[in-house]
Amino acid sequence: MAQGASWVGTSPSGSHLTRRTARRALPRRGEIWYVYTPGQPDDPHQPRPALVVSENVRNTMRDDLIVVPMFSRGRAGPTRVSIPAGTGSVPADSIVFCEEITTIDRDFLARGPIGPPLDRHRMDEIVRAIRRAIGEVVPEP
Image (cartoon, rainbow, N blue to C red):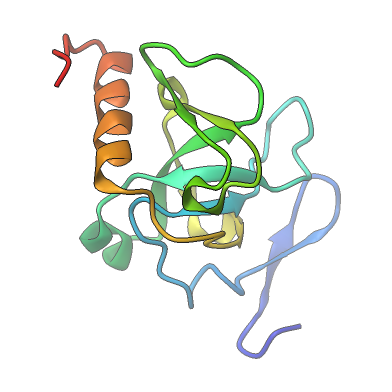
């Protein structure tokens, strides 16, 4: 176990979750992290990529983060943004499902960031998609 890590619980599969990244790391807006998503019907035991969308100041003050999940399958649309492979070190073409915005406790961070934060243009596109997902009429830039 890494120095400074401590056991915090057990995932639904019985595997241990650690605070290795939970308290020491400071996820930043635009970074992609692998997170545990308990309660997901597909496979709640595998960490999944998620984009951090909460503001950096909030991330320093809270024990939870606002994230949107990313998937390698699906289609881009008004509330879904395409991220080409290599962008932010994403290994494969991915789709950010902005209609599934959620908060997760830092204890569910698995590892990351996988690369540099997404650029401002891409983050603006994601924020517009989140706004559409909550019912705002968002004009195109």
